[in-house]
Length: 473
Figure 1: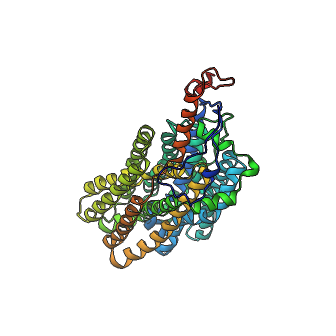
Figure 2: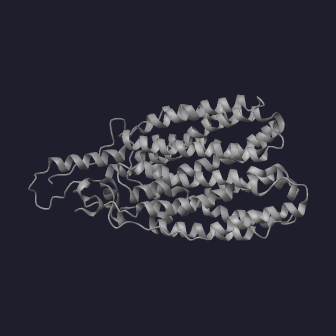
Figure 3: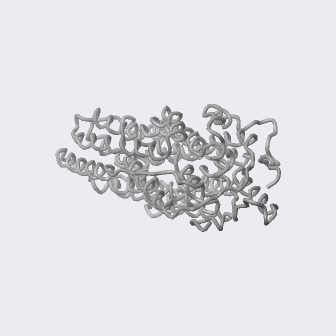
């Protein structure tokens, strides 16, 4: 193949900013293959993430009912949801290390085990005096959130360059579907009745249903051959040359990526806060509408699922990562403003429409951030970059949920939502300043150029990647 040039970081790169990509060398084209079972792996992961996401919201969307059942303050009930945000933060570093050294399968199996154990603990807590135990069960379930950095890693390991963003979007859909079910089912399964014994019965039924679903074990594995040349190059780094600490440090010094970390945290943190406090927002203006509060949450997430798929397919076709992220972020801000100033009009159908618009863009942003991060940080681990994004989102989610809850108690929902709009505006501005340095795309393109320049009769030449797909080598 002749001499191999080093991986270019793009015209917009800061030459004084070292990264793992500077040292990555372009090696000869390697055999790649797209395994048909990649879709099964994607389905298995999505099914687990759906179960865990449901655990997160099963208290929040009927917070007024649990507040009365356990005799608690609003903040105590909010912590049943915020636990999922808090637990991920200290677990971020060991989990990303485990992803690199133990693999996806073991991380997901451990997460599924904690999710299952916590769900069964909660089945015995449908009693007004058992809040401490239900809090513990929720904490055990929250350890299952260690899966949250996996979607982009799973997509890169199993899917080719023309479908990786779509695959990441589908992986995120599992979480979104779990959130949607978490909005829809609890208000239906646990009606707002006065009789405590009847209420305990309904709560117990909900816990048993969620525990039964969480009992299924999910298994993922790593494909034998990489799906793309970029993934082949990332795998080609010798283990002795890889340092987890150095990888973290490289990411923290990557200025475009750190801007994305903050802007992603502001957007998804706002979504977490809205999801946790949606019941209180709706009940303030529409008393007795717990079921419709859940349906509005469902509308937000279902619209977001559509947004995620559209954005994933769009990214695979256009590779316009920054432009798409900026556009979706801006419309998230617009959607939040419209939702804020129409919530108190007294028409639930208006709230459904504005919530759907908000959800399409705000929830649809989830996979965009993951994929843009992988592009900005290649060849660093996808699990580590996604983990940092999630850590930022959890921190902002806790801050926003506590702050917005206090504002609702003192000044009402309008002021609380304006509070979030201000931070979404800041996030939009930060996104505009991110330099679009698509390192993964450059690795794939440069590999292809090296191949086309090679003599056709070169001994040991490897056929184009499309010939290698589905085992046609």
